[in-house]
Image 1 (cartoon, rainbow, N blue to C red):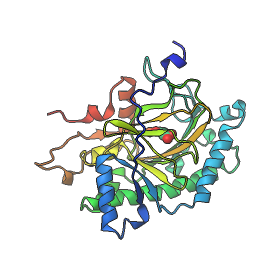
Image 2: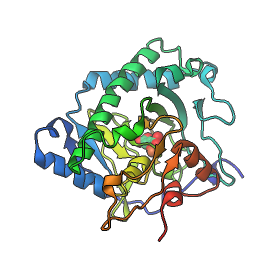
Image 3: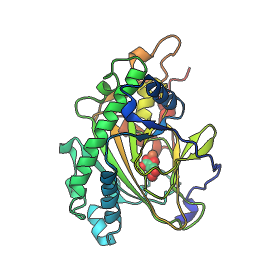
Image 4: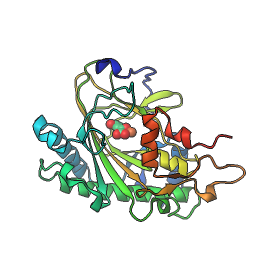
Length: 319
Ligand SMILES: O=C(O)CCC(=O)C(=O)O
Ligand SMILES: [Fe+2]
């Protein structure tokens, strides 16, 4: 089967573009904003964060080094190429399942934290400041994510470290630079519908080109471009830890016929081989345990996807 005919179509597209924005700098002082976060994360699981404290000029620098890398000649990018059966490094869509629909996307996927787990042979040396900027960006995003994990706990009247303590002493942070070339066909998707396996995903969108859509209230909602904002998407592991209170949204990416699009997704995740499950204090008679405990959710997720199964469904306790 050829590449194009395996690609997904944009069925069910909607023009709805309603998407919440939250000023995260107000979350420590405003009960209103705290309640808004709780309501947004327990309904659609995503919002655009402004007031996050990362200067716009720095966000532009991150986009800049990413665009420079993807613009390099192919032989230069191949220095970071991923091995056939691995996710880390540079390449196009990884085939993990038979009859898989191919995404129209090139990616550079790297582990950033813990620092001693970096595979530096896969990190671009060109542009020369790539590593330094990635380190600085990941450090800043980690702080935004940790604050958000605390806010989410507080919004449920829990001790603020309740979620963070499940991440262990050596939590993981990974980055995926996504590069979507102009689409060869109007029906091609940049990324097919999925939810993220992370705890929290923080996404830096292209400063001009839209493409991300979230499945909300039965239709696809386009996430508008706000250049200085960070898109927050909860991942499956937060849905599990919160016993289903917070939602991991299904999202996809459209391609554009004329323009390329870039995005930078950062994912946090509990330490390697860590075990996660619903917080005990969120399980009671009114809200019975929805998910079983899982060790190494990353590997579990990979196995499910290989078998064409939905990971969240596989951990759900069926009554
Ligand atoms: O490019 C985007 O806007 C989203 C990418 C995405 O969903 C992902 O990398 O998991
Ligand atoms: Fe995603």
